[in-house]
Image 1 (cartoon, rainbow over the protein chains, first blue to last red):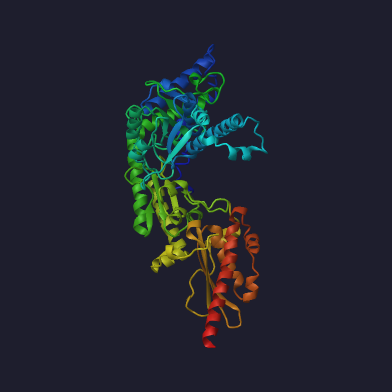
Image 2 (spheres, rainbow over the protein chains, first blue to last red):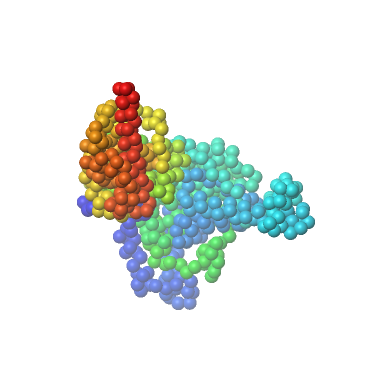
Length: 453
Length: 133
């Protein structure tokens, strides 16, 4: 066994050697531009891209024309959300998403909210000038706003309902197990709702959402369904037809492919339209211009093929190892809490809180093991993970949480090593923890008046 | 985050971890921080009649810098008078451990813990004297 041990496969995965082998020719002799139509270099590159497109499509039950290559999941998420909102703006401008989504979704939604707000502010000033019959300046603005109630003005209210280019967004809470409630999702839909964006599997807690049910609900309401499927694809079966997904973000580096390449699935029947966010030579049927990264696409394709073929066996093996890790830790240590649903969970994920042992300091103690912590103990941000907070996890427990991500190359020997090491370090930290001592003495930590700083 | 060697050294071999009898009239206990913020420090000082810090013990829930800061101050206060201990500032701690800016609050906590422990000791002594007179 070699140290350090990598158990952070939610962040990224190592490149599978078979993927690298497939890529190498396209970094060497077959370097052509897939858009070059008039010579053999271009044809070879195009053929390689087509094969990869087929491989990626097959992994998710799509047709190859439905795969748009992008630079990765962040771009795919941006393209899906901004693209839909812009294209369908005359139809509606409301998005529903979850508080536990990835920042690529949440921050994109926040930007669209800002765009809408700025537009409304401009309209408001315009209407104010009309009502007042004079120009609105910085000096008279607040005075005029006090005089004229623009907010309840009929004309302004009509203007505010016009397409703005931005969006209004509902950020739904999740249930304590991390899953969305379909009733709450249905209740949040309005006639203005054009898009629901809910992830397949959460990157922190590994909780898998009821995607097929969400898809069926959205389809029945005529709302588009975008799924950030990055963390679940290749680990749990995902099928865009069975799940009625309209748009899906995928990335290569979470499935043992190269970084910097991903895709957006865009449904053809019923047809989903998106406005591009990158303009240029009209590559990828105009949805994502830019010269194709042929070698990375070939690697992505190979990674997708391997993921599809090896999924059942690999998932079963990883699940067995994850359970060994979970049992090893929870049998040896008291006061441990698993965050998120155990039933609906990625096989390789274990997000666990070791009460009264701080996460960052535990990571420092197990520095030969690469994991991730839900704690953010810095003066700039004392906030622990927003995902754990959205689940209602107590802040102290959120500070005490560790995310283990097992993957294709995790071995049983590594799991054994990690169990022993973590148990030892948690015990050591708890021996040093005033909270553990107080909890053992039966003192209710909530009853103490803490001096926040 | 890359920690300094001193932080790592204190984290790996913390000094004076433990608990003193908080009922002992000569022991002052300072408990600072909050679990929700991710760090809680408890510093206990055993102080003689003439105000000399004879012993110090700590327990800390927090990151490596918080543990190192509390471990360091237990070393520093031992053998000092209460007045001398009161002059230890978070800047001294941060400098000694080369704490990065985002971890300065760990040193602030250590300074607060010393002050809180001494204050607790003084309160105890005042209560005792009030009873005696």
